[in-house]
Length: 422
Image 1 (cartoon, rainbow, N blue to C red):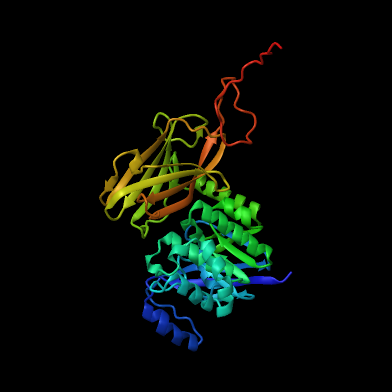
Image 2: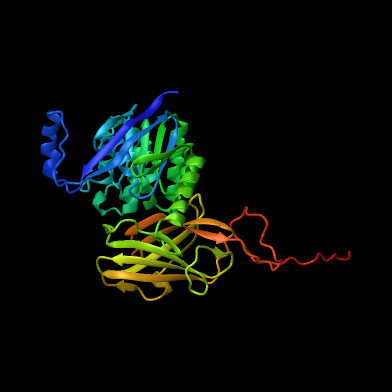
């Protein structure tokens, strides 16, 4: 089968503190002289190093990994937004990418004008865009606003129209980043369906997501990026399993982490949003640090975070998930649970107590969001840590439940059968 995307020994280097003048003028001179400048006093950072993989035509490849793993940089190199420092990436055919909300859109132009502009950028003829126009607009759901300047669109409207253009103009290779998280559940479902259709038509899809369920549903192959390198590649199920096991190993074996610490931020750098998650601690029903909790036992998750600026109506948000990314439960300190949280800059601790958690024995990844209600999350850490739940004697029989093949552990009773007289 023909190879659609081939990446060989790919590397991308940045200089921390690099100026625009250096990147635009000095680098052009360096390239003309056939050399790479190493600026004194500037620290080098390799976002990608010796990355190798290939994708066949008609294949959907999932790209997973934690924040800062190099996923978005890889997609930008493949999309020719930024050049590689070393190695090469070859893409066969016409490529369409959606890496940021409204990629390729001009804010002063209307939705209609941007559809044609974006189509032209992707190499489409006007007649080809006209033939697909009605289908694009119907899929995006912005019919009423199609002649409104897109600067007045919400982020959700932006991404719906941008995705509709990227997916419907028949690219040979479709590259999608995590921007689909902006849409609602129904739109995300339609997007996954459309990407699946694109792959079935013999085109190629590269899909970056923190949603393991979506990756496993859409993609037959996957690569796990870690520290700018490929940590694992192969069948999606195996790669996702390796990734989640790696998260759990990191959380349980990190050097110097005290008992009960599920997550400790490895870097002292602040999150650009101004809200930085520092640690997650697990406490038992008595408030003591512990490594795991038993089914139906009370527990507390203690968040430690830093705010670099004042926040109004601030709300931490916890999601407890299955290993394939399905959110089992979500809880937040949002205004519907009390007065809005207004916080000044500083370091804080906040406890989220569960009176009892009816989860079966197993490991459950935890996502953390720092949010302002009714606004997109200002900070997110997916797969921050894994909560370990141990089996317990929930039926009072002296034995824990025998089968681990379920998620919920409910307390219930069965009564003897009573035969009804006829």
